[in-house]
Length: 148
Image (tube, rainbow, N blue to C red; front, side):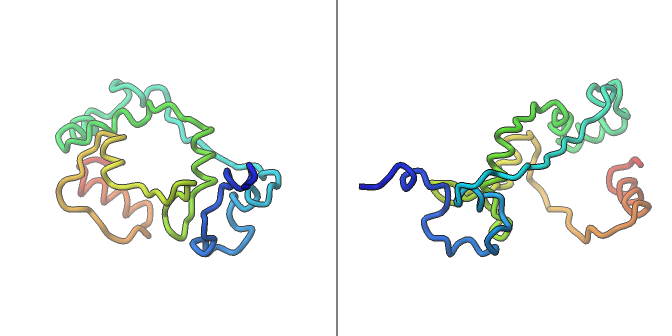
C-alpha cells in the first residue's frame, strides 16, 4: 500500500524530464522535504495618476484603442495573488518553458494571454533583436507607436 507521501509527491513521475542540476530549482527543496528558501518577488507599481485615463497621455490612449489593445489599459488594475505566483514559480521549469504539475506539463499559450488580458493576437508578429540602447528604444516607440 502506498504512503500518503507517495500519493502527493510534487515531482514528475519520471525525473528524467528535469534536466537542471539538483539544487538549481526551488522545488528541489520540496522533494527533499527541506524548508523552502525565501522567494524574492517584486511588484512594479504605477503612480496613481497612471491608473486612470486622466494620467495617461491622450495619444497613448488613442493609439491603444485604435490598435485594439485597449485591454492593456486594465493591466495595472489586476489584483496580484502572491500565493499563486509563489506556487507557480515553484512549478516552473525554465528548460521546457512549462509548469510541471502533478497531472502533467502545462504551458502558457498566446491564446491564454489573449483571454486574460483582452489583447488581440491576429496579424503578423513584430519581432527582432532586443539588445538596444535606451535611445534606440525611444526611437522605435516613436516610429511604431507614434509617441516617445
